[in-house]
Image (cartoon, rainbow, N blue to C red; front, side):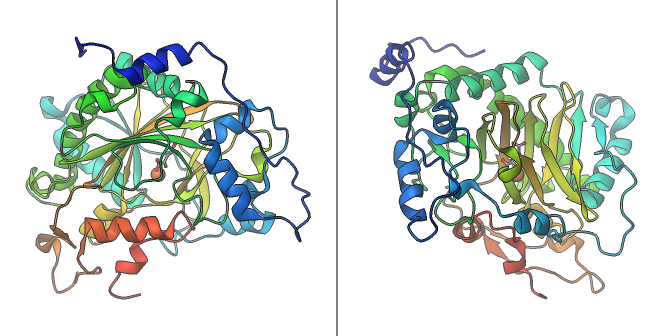
Length: 403
Ligand SMILES: O=C(O)CCC(=O)C(=O)O
Ligand SMILES: [Fe+2]
C-alpha cells in the first residue's frame, strides 16, 4: 500500500481536530403534512443543500419523518414497476427466479478464456449485469475501501462541508443528490465523488481518511477493468484490445455512496431507477443489499456475494455495441437498516477534454445491422445526462436514430 511521507496539510490537521468534536445538527422540515399552499419546495431544497451535511445530517438530527421533497407518491412507485427500461427485452416471458450471473475469472490463463468470453457475452447481452469472482482484487482491499469510504461519510459534518460542492469541474467532491434541483424526488443517499483519471489525481486532493485506500483500489479496479474490456471486445468478435484502443479504460471515477438508515424507507428511494452514463461500471457493495435491476418487467435483487464485484454495462457501451450489450435500469431501495455502503467505479472520460466521437463500432455493423445511434462526444452525452437528471428516462433515447 502507498505511504506518503510528508507534512500534514492544514486541511488534514483540521480534519483530525474536528473528528474529535460532535457532528452539528441540521434543520429539517420533518412534517409531510405541511400545508401545500405554503410549502416552498425550492426553499426546502436550498436549506438542505446549504446545510452541506447531506442525508446523513438529516439522519443524525434524529428525524422520524422524511422531509417532503424525498417523498415519492404511491402512483410514482407503482409506475416504476411497469416502466420499460432502455433495453427491456420485449416479448419475453417473465423470468422464473432470475439469478444475476456469477462469472469466475480465476481460470482465464489456464484455458478458461473461451468459456468466460461466452458467459460475458450472454450476461452482457441478456441481463446487462453480472458479478465476478476470483477477479484478482484481494478481499482486504475490498473491505478496506468500503471502510475508508464509510469513514469519510462518518467524519463530522463540519469537515465534510469542506468538500461539499455541486461544481461540475471539481475532481473531488462530497455531494448529496447531484440532480437535487432537477429531479422530482430526492434520494436518500450521499456520495463522495472522485475523478481518478485520465489525468492522475494528486492524492493530496483526497480526504486523508480514505486517501491511501482509494488510491490502491483505483489502481486495482483499473486493472480489472482492462481484463473486462478485453473480454467484452472478444465477446463482440473484435480483437481483445479493441475497446482499450477506444480509450474505455483511460479514465475512471470512484463514487463512494452512503445510504443511512432511513426512517420511512417505503416512501422514498436510495437511488432512483437509472442506467449508468459510462462505458462500464464495477460496483462493490456491502452485505446489506437493496440493489435491484429491472429485467423482463420486474425488479430483481442483485444479492451481495462476499468477495464478488458487480459489473454492469453503461449507456455508452450499449451505444457502441449497437444494442448487442444492454445498459439496464437499476435502483437502490431505501432501508430501515443502515448505513449501506457501496463504491462504484465508472469507466468514463468525465471532465476530460476529449473530442473523440463515440458511435456504433463500424466493425460490427452490416447491411442487416445498421447503426442504431448517432455519434456523440462524451461531453455532449454527459451534459445531456446531467441536465436531465435521474428522471426515469434513458439518455440513450436522445441519441437513437430511429425513435
Ligand atoms: O449503490 C449501489 O449499489 C448502486 C449505485 C449506482 O447505481 C451508481 O452509482 O450508479
Ligand atoms: Fe448506477
